[in-house]
Image (cartoon, rainbow, N blue to C red; front, side):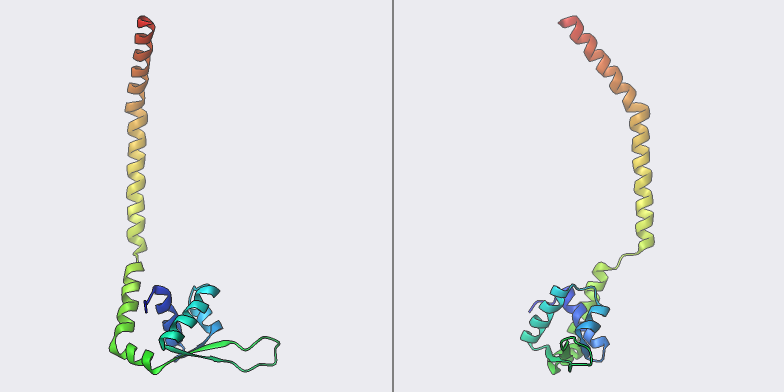
Length: 142
């Protein structure tokens, strides 16, 4: 089974809720779409990492909600370290220092401005002169 960022987010949401989380709790703790949550339910249940239970019918008219419960296999895998190390790798890959990005954007803006200035102040006049010369040459040869 492949542990995608979505899989890890799903498992972390369950783990953060003491190993038992409803569809609503998982939705509130992740940015997964409904389809992604359903896929993770099936995938993790098939792999033996969660058991799926259902809430009781309440006083409202809504249907029972799915509840994911981490299995002993998932708890052992977490203790063995695969869970945290994979989650940290995903976080490291997606963590970006916004201040560093802002500096990079500022530097790029400066470079673009310098390039625009160079083109408009130096190259544009030369390009116009070359176009005039081409026109003159075409007029004399034609």
